[in-house]
Structure formats: C-alpha cells, structure tokens
Image (cartoon, rainbow, N blue to C red):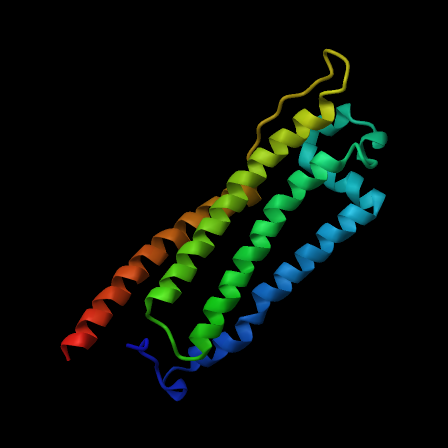
Length: 187
C-alpha cells in the first residue's frame, strides 16, 4: 500500500517544503566548506583548535596547530561536522517527501527519528571531542601545565535538546502513521 498523499493545492505549507528542503543542504555545504578550509588554512586551524580548547588555549602555543601535531584535534573537530551534515541530508530528504505531499508515513517518522539521533550524536560527540582535544593538545606540556577540561557549550546542549525532541517526535509520528495505516486498511 502506498503512503497517503495530499493534493498539493490542499495545503500551501506543503508546497513550501520543496523550497525549504534546500536550507539544510546549504547549511551542510557551508559547514563542510568550513571544515575543508580549517584543514587547509593554518590560521583557521589555530582558531578552531583554540575555540575547542576554550580557557585551556592559554597553555597552547601556535606550533600545536601545525600538521601533523594538529591531526588528532582536526579529526575530532571533523567528526561532529560530518554527523551534522548527515543529519542535514536526512532533513532534506524529509522536506522533499513532504513537498511531494507525503506527510504521515513510516519513512517520514524514521527520518525524523534518525535526524534526532544525529542531533544527539552531534551534541554528545561534540562535547566529548572537545575534552579529547584538550587532553591531546596539552598532553605534551610539562607537568603542571597539562589540562583536563570537560565543558558543555550552548551549541552542544542545544543539539542534545533538539535531538531528543526530534527523537520523541519521530516516535509519535511512527505511532500516528501506524494508526493512519490501520484506519485506511479498515476503510
């Protein structure tokens, strides 16, 4: 049985979903461009590493941002960005399905749940990666100048909150799609 669809003239916001779908792709593209530039431009690399270190950057010299010494921090900064790009791809797919008039079905519920999981991973791995970056960068410092830092940024907490909200919404949509499918099969 194919998923229920709405005639596109019945709901104007559904038509807008086709245009809105490109916003997550643009966000992912810009983020990935920033990641590539961070890998390539030493000044951006130093800025990104210092941003991840926060106050611990006082214990780090500019030489720590040169390759290959900056390889571990760069990889740790890249992982959440790749997960975020994957999450934006899921949202793009969701909005494209909505633009086709497919609103309430299991694949859409699954896309919402997986986007929620993506946001949760971005928040959790972002926090963990910042801690690991501080450890990796300051491990070579002399005793007394090594730093262990665990911190939660507003972005990480926001990603976690959005992720859990999306995850819960995906579960509700999944149940609603199941009920709609059962109702449609009865009729």
